[in-house]
Length: 110
Image (cartoon, rainbow, N blue to C red):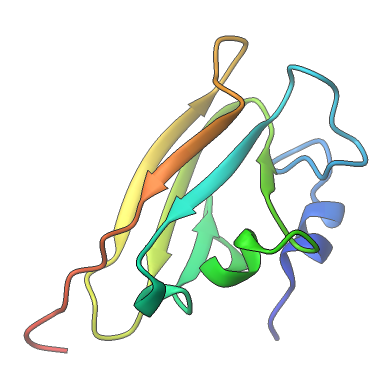
C-alpha cells in the first residue's frame, strides 16, 4: 500500500515530518529534491519511510515536505539506477530549505 506525502506527514506530525498545519516558525525546513525531469518518478524515503515520488514533492498540493528538527536520512530510489542517499540536519541554524541533488546514475547491471 502506497501512502501519499500528505497522509504520511499528518500521521507523523511532530516527530519525523512537520506538515504546514503544525509547523511553527523556525522549527522546520522544507526538503527539496533536485532531479532531472527523466527521474521525477523516483521514490523518496526519509528515515526509511516512503514519502512519495519526486514529482509529488514538487506540486503545491502535496509538497514541499517539511522536516522536523533533528538528523534525517534522505534516499531517492529508481529501478535500474544507483540510489542517492544523504544525511541532513535540521536545527536552529538550518536554512528555509534543504536541497538534495539526486543524480541517479544508471546501473550497468540492474
